[in-house]
Image (tube, rainbow, N blue to C red):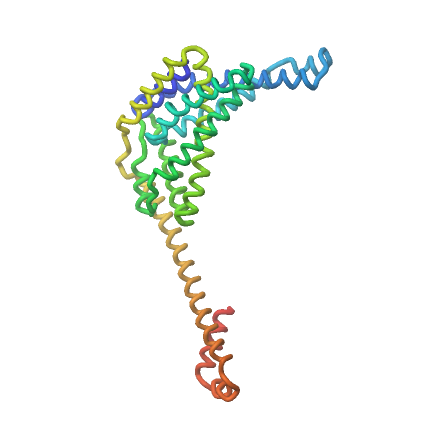
Length: 324
């Protein structure tokens, strides 16, 4: 419950509260605790199924030190992943995370209540199922209801400048980096065409939101063991608040913004130049092939006359240039 409240507090305050990182400590602890419980349960199941009791290996593996290490790094990754996704999330993302996700979690917990024993491993199964459906519906929503417009260099430049800023310099720096990476992703994916952009974007949205939903589901799963109704109502109110809240964004143009823009612009220019060259070569090849076809349609007398004409010299010169 405390971890979930810390999550809400972080989302609401990370842009203007310099000590918002304190809330991440509670989230990290909750993740580490949940992962440790899951790993301990999994280890005990494997031990009972594969190792003879009171044997040497059984006694050696009785400690949990390595599980603490694994849980620590898993919690570290989960916290950073959660943090990096939340500071770049759009308003509709919060509706899926704090309304649809807990609804699905409650539904599947009730659905599988009589089929699964209440333990950490089966909680993990329910979390995976919940996250899958939430991420899939979220990806479909973005695919069909979020309008995809052409993402050009100017859009990339605007996206790079107007990122979500923070009064805490570390959060501000990370938000800048994520905005640049997201802009580069959008720009280069659009270069493949709108169809391929939608396909790749659907895959990225699904995978990213699946991981994000899984981590948040862990927090909800732990909190729902106490007061389900109150937690869901509070979560619903937070989602509505975030949806209608006003985000602060950076408006100042920094030196590196222009440098990155010029670098991407130069890459785009080189790409266009290469495409233009290829198009010219293709047009020249088509022209040469048409001339060869015309020659093949001539009779022997006409070919003899053509052989000593200027057209033959031009065709030979053009073929030599194409074969260089």
